[in-house]
Length: 397
Image: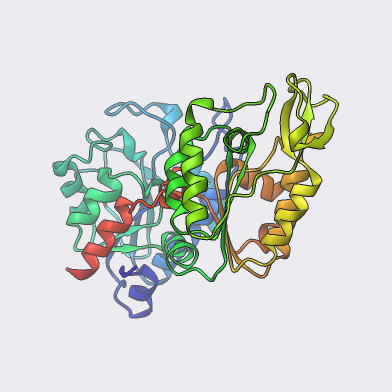
């Protein structure tokens, strides 16, 4: 995708003395006292900000935090704790500016944090007047918040329309590159793993991927629905019987292309959904009426692992079992290790997926880990994200 990259502007010396407005994703979790409990997003945002400072820019950075009421800045919604943590990481004091829409006093070499952008009236609905005021604050707008790339808001889309220059920061550019490599120009075979509790929440993803991938691995409650569609009994397992026709359509679409949706040949069952439930491995054809399927079986896991090791590209969204419970984690663990050992380019995203990656310590073996959440899912659905669309359009203007 052709967009202007902030790193290129810096390398060409086009940033010195300029006012740079960075839209970051600093929406970090906090405890009841307002203390940041996990600072990955703050750490990830620092390189872009430091790049701007090193290039001699006057730097403004903003983000949303939580779900504030527009027009009301409450203490719990303030970016002050974020600025404090970022200042610790960067070794500098970072002042926080409230009521910044009508003007910001910042000079080259300085960095200020603009208070929670979702407090501004009209932010979420991408109010044009608000977007134009934001654009007037800067010479260069830098979008570096992939987690918001699927939303057309004033600080993510509108400002990009009206700023003199609109470009992608290093985090957003990396996401674009990884997505292009995995979905638009993949090395074959392309294998996608889509798992989760419900087919309905990922049906459009399954349909979109069915037109493109060489193998579609389903897991969790989604796999149960596909097992039903294949004529297997699933006991009292989580499934969506009303979507059997949709599941069958995905299977047929894959089959028509010479591709496949592997149906588990064995499963791990329990009588209750609990961490201390007794786990029983049984053939997929032998599930009892009172069984809960909580994981794929070892035979299925190994067969999928063997296929993953032969893949050229792997897209992973969702664990294949209840990996939080030790007795039902083997499927996800085997899949994770296979991805780590594969020579394929791999891209992974989604909260539970990131938790599994962390649990099995394979962060360095995954080609790219997307932090986008909803944005990542929309990409898998085949949608063009608003942030990508406007930045590509501005690159041509």
